Image (cartoon, rainbow, N blue to C red; front, side, top):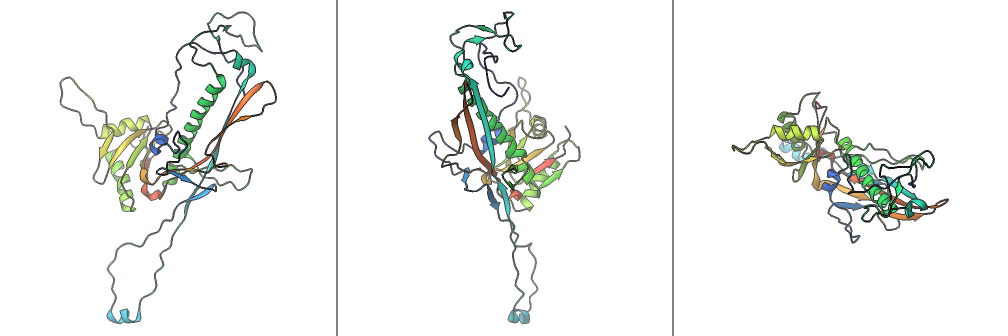
Length: 329
């Protein structure tokens, strides 16, 4: 249903969230706005247009040995132009709405006891009405808004990783931000269905090095399958009669040290290497605010709040990142 009403029963007991709703990659980028509303410019960029630049890539050329004669040096050499490119991305709209009927707001003690009567509302048998002290949800609208905010965080995490780019050519076209997996094209290693190996890892890191990428704070983001395999590749089990196994969270290679990050929004067959120092969350403010949570008018006996924001990701030079795709799952 589009709104929450009294058929959505309250339940007694501690709240437990089900399914994988963690957002580790989003957390790794840092909190863009503090609780006091102050922008953290270390990991945030403010723009006044949906479209924004991520960098101007250029190459001054590979090293060679010049062969310039004295005579040629007098007459001069042909001018050489260094051309630049343009990497860009776009913000997009993240928007949710929570609406709760007046009746649902007033019946916070309605719980499902399993002892339901024969009566029903619209074919749904209601629970029994009790005023139970300590019910964890006493304001249904607050609960719905809070959980929808978590949902937006999940959407951001997924989009920042896997989003596909689409510019808003008109008001009828949705702007879609490009995720870092999609953006990483130069340093891509195709596994071809093989199991993850140190050869894949070394090749991906070497591609970053050969492309001139920096390696100051690299993380390897992967799903649970590749996270376990990546840890196993570098496993070093201590010699102990009472302790076995390992929990690898950091790996050292010839060119860099990288941390392992598990993210449920990653494709199962992919490992993404991210240089965090060049990645920023991009905010496009609305009337000076970065996220609007506002009461909205309704047609009848209900109360609603709308959540609205305009956000994207600046992944910097895509050559600073790498990915391994097509791994065995």
